Amino acid sequence: MHDLLFDFISKYVSLTEEEKKAILSLAIFHSVKKGTILLKEGEKSNDGYFVLKGCIRTYYIIDGDEKTTAFYTEMEALTPHCVITQAPSEYYISCVNDTILLVSNPDMEAETFDKFPKFVTLCRILAEELLAKQQINFDEFKTSSPEQRYLNLLQKRPDLIQRVPQHQLASYLGIKPQSLSRLRARISEKNKD
View 1 (tube, helix red, strand yellow):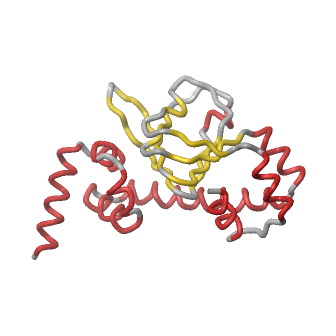
View 2: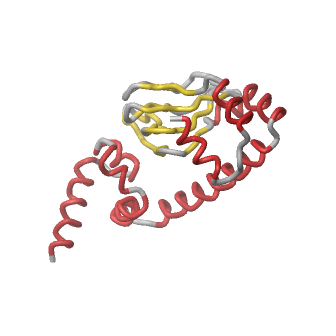
């Protein structure tokens, strides 16, 4: 599993054998079962996550309904707001599938940055990419219809269609599961013509 991580990192910075050993010595690899809640609303946490394999999601519970705001899959990172603000979390994070995560905290990261400054560069690049991606996703969501959102999802993240339960996908798209079923049927009919 660590080879996946090293291949990913090598796209941004090259690692020495010493740096690879340092990463492996941190004991940051965690296997987590499907359905596990990593963070609940109201809890405080210092844990940041990097998905090596699987899928996690963030969601709020509003008036008893889950409102999914994001899915994080292979080679995507999530640092919950509560890690930065030191306030209780406003949302939940759970595993959609059996997942392998890298779990870190600010102290561990600071120590690693001191020993290996190139990780600062890596994290800065990843943070910039994540911020740009989230801005684009937010803009697309705000300016598109549910059908356009679904078509965008099919184009940009088709893996989610297969690995995420329909009710979570519907919530993410801002519609009810029944509406998603109708939308899928309508698109399927159009594609037959």
